[in-house]
Amino acid sequence: MEHINVAHPYFGVFFLLVFTTVAFIATTTISSFVGKRLAARETEKLKLSIYECGPEVSRQPNKISAQFYLYALLFILFDVEIIFMFPWAVDFKILGIFGFIEMITFIFLLAVGFIYAWKKGAFEWHSMK
Image (cartoon, rainbow, N blue to C red; front, side, top):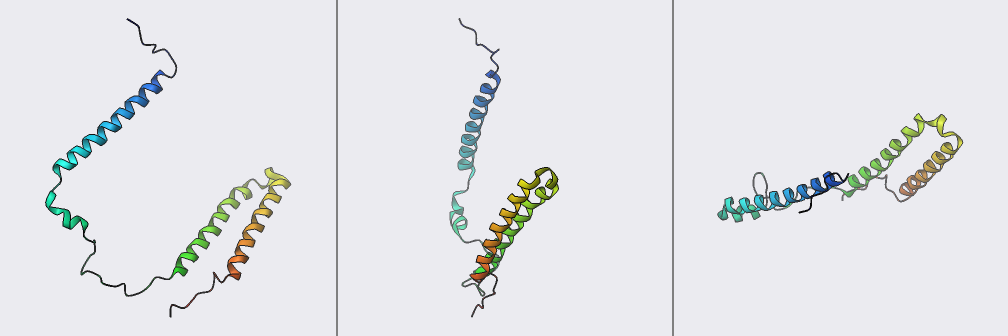
């Protein structure tokens, strides 16, 4: 009869991996089985219906403009720019001239994107008529 070598440094990690995998599969299987047994069968029509509060809506009274989406996208773009600029400003002296050239290049590329969006009319509000 052989002994299991529990002195190996990765034995604990392997044991936890196997134990976690078995526990995950067992939990998923048991919860699926219990869910199928306890679920009420007569509520299928209610589950498949559209969820709304109040009367059923036939048509949306107003259209949401895609311009809101475009403004949000541009806001996130330039907000992320500030997030990248803050650590650079904190470590400006440590980074030296190389960091300064990198930030100038970064700002230049964002300015090119800003000018492109401006020329395409992304900042002009379009009428919904």
